[in-house]
Each structure stands twice: as structure tokens, then as C-alpha cells.
Amino acid sequence: MCSVCGCGEAEIVLDKDKAGAHAHGPHDHDHPHDHDHDHPHDHDHDHGPHHHDEGVIDYGQGAAGAHAPGVSQERMVAIERDILSKNDAYARDNRRALAAKGVFALNFVSSPGSGKTALLARTIEALKGRLAVSVIEGDQQTSNDAERIRATGAPAIQINTGKGCHLDAHMVGHAIETLAPEPNSALFIENVGNLVCPAGFDLGEAHKVVVLSVTEGEDKPLKYPDMFVAADLLLLNKSDLLPHLDFDVGLCLANALRINPHLQTLVVSAKTGEGLAAFVAWIEASAARRAAALAKG
Amino acid sequence: MHEMSLTESIVDIAVEAARKEGAERVTRVVVDVGALSHVEPEALEFCFAAVARGTLAEGARLEITRLPGAGWCPDCGKTVALAERFSACPECGGFRVQMTAGDELKVREMEIA
Image 1 (cartoon, rainbow over the protein chains, first blue to last red):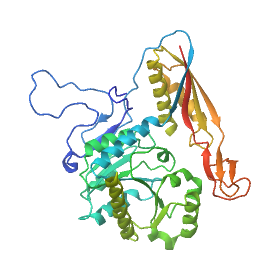
Image 2: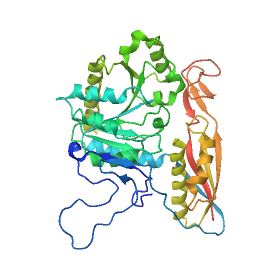
Image 3: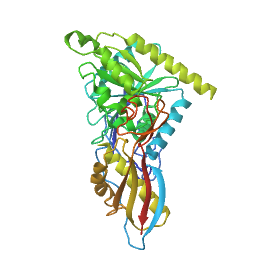
Image 4: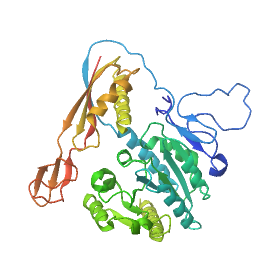
């Protein structure tokens, strides 16, 4: 465990050249200053996320901190603290840091294979020249998704959660620091493909966007309600496949709206580009609305 | 398995509070888990011993209090029992019930030595 910030074990992969961020991992606690110290300042703090050359924060390695146990008289102590209070505190910090720079953050959640990465890549292309975008990619392993995003020209950082099933606000805080999104830009956070756990973890985003694909089944919102309640926008992806399927779009959206009457919905295709203009308009309108709300205080 | 990270939070909160109290050991941790929260109590128990190992809470007993779900039905004008987060009102069958209790996730108290 990292003794500075108390986090577990993780790894951030970052493409230093393309991301344009400075090259220290959030956990190395090494100072990137260039002047020569005469004393040996080369020691590696070997705790916290393992830092790879290609830029991965890996929460799959390392050991927990240890404390010496002892024995004495027993007594009860009231605590009354929310189990998620720590995550929520980090999320508040992230939200504050993003607001200070006018960065509009979206947290994309879905089951694996819904087409999130393809959708993000296409959306980044559509936003070119209108809104700068940087991306935080969350997966258990590999930097494949961050590489796909970088191919669009957008800076991206990969968080590998190891055995973790979701991103938490602490990992994302480090990734934001390293990625350093430019002022008045958009930040897309692609969560680990999982329709359950990411619902409970606030990352400091403006909105959760749930992506569902038409190959999945109309009753997904009823089976995994938490995620559809937590989200503000539903993107029903892969609409290009509809002619080949028995998927009932109306029934799917009705199910989603039964779970969350305030959910906004769009039918899109990352392949053909259907619905993407509407999604881009939603992003620009939501970002403007948020900026106005922040300006008002 | 997000129960694993929730369990890490439980142990962190208990160990932090125990240090503040100058305790040498945590022997029991009592948590409230609402019936409608997205947490499996058995999974918490399963993770707890492993996560607590090597901390002040090593060997501590985890006690989970299950709190029942409840919601306000605007059609009936009263609080009703809720078995699932988005289920219909058990009295009128309507779907407008607003959850008011059951999503708790809290470390309530602990026993220290």
C-alpha cells in the first residue's frame, strides 16, 4: 500500500510523447526537476502502482501495508462513517480540480463489448476542431484501448485495475494529474466493462453515460438497474445491426425509462455514424450548461 | 468483485479510527448494509479476513446488520416496504415509489482492545 496516499496497487500506462504530459507516474513521488543534486536522489520508492515504461498504472501488483497488532482491554467505539466516504472525498477533489480548469468529464459505463472504445474514437473525430478531448481508459489488463484512442490524435492514459472490477476516484485523480487535460476541454473516462460495480463509484464526472448495444437484449436495464439509475444518458449502440436482429428498440428504451424516468436516450452507431451528430450536440450543450452553472457559482 | 474494495474501505476506516483511539487491536467491526444496496454481505465476510490480515483489524469479527428497504409511494401517500430497488408499490402496484431506506453502507461501530 502506498504510505503517502493510502491507495492499493495499480499501474498507469501513459504514452509520454503523445499524451504531452510530464513523465512522472503519480506514485513514484520522484520530482521531475532537472537540476543536479549531489546527494543520491535516485532511490525508487517501491510502493504503490507499478509504473511501466509505456505508461500503465497497475493496481494488480504490490502488497498491503502492515501494522503491529497488540493486546489489551476491549471497548466499543462509535464510527458512523459511510464505507464509500473515502472514494467520495477523492471524487469531490477530482470534481473541484476539473471545474477549476473548465474540464467537462463524462464517465462511460457498459458491459464488455458494447462498443465504447469505437464510439469514443468516432466521437473524438466528430468533435475535432470544436472541442479538445482527452481520455482515461480503464481495463483490467492491456493498453489496447488507449492505443486505439491515441490513433485519433487525442491524448490518452491507460489505467489497468489488475483484479479490480471498476475505476475508483483515487485512480482517476492520479490519471487526471498525469494526463493534465487542457483548459476548457472534455475528458472521457472509459470505465472497466462491467454493468454492476462502476455504478457505485463516483469518479468526479459531470455525467455517467451508459452504453448498451442492440446485441445485448432489451431487458438489460431491468437486470442491471443500478447502472441505469446512476446514468444521465443512454446510448443504444450498434444500430446498424438492427436489420439482422429481433431487438425491440422501443421496449428497451421503455425498460430503461421505467428504471430511470429522467434518463435521456439516443440510438447511435459507431460504425455508420448514425446518431453521432445528436450525441455531439448533447456533449456541447451539456458542457456549456455546466460551464454556465459553474460561472454562476 | 467490488466487495473487495468496499472491504478495504471498511478495514481502512476501522484501522484509522483505532489508531485515533490509541487502540492496539480491533476485535469486532459492526457495519450496516441496506437490503437494497448493491452489496453481497457474504462476499464482504469472505473478503474481510483476507483484507484485515496484517492490520490492526487482523482476526476481528465482522458483524453485518441488514437494514430493510423502504420507499415513499406518492400514490398511496405513505411509506411502504421495498423488496427490490425498483419494484412496484406492494399496496397499489404503481412504479413511482421513491426509495427512502435500504441503500445504507456504513461502518457503525467497532470494538477495540
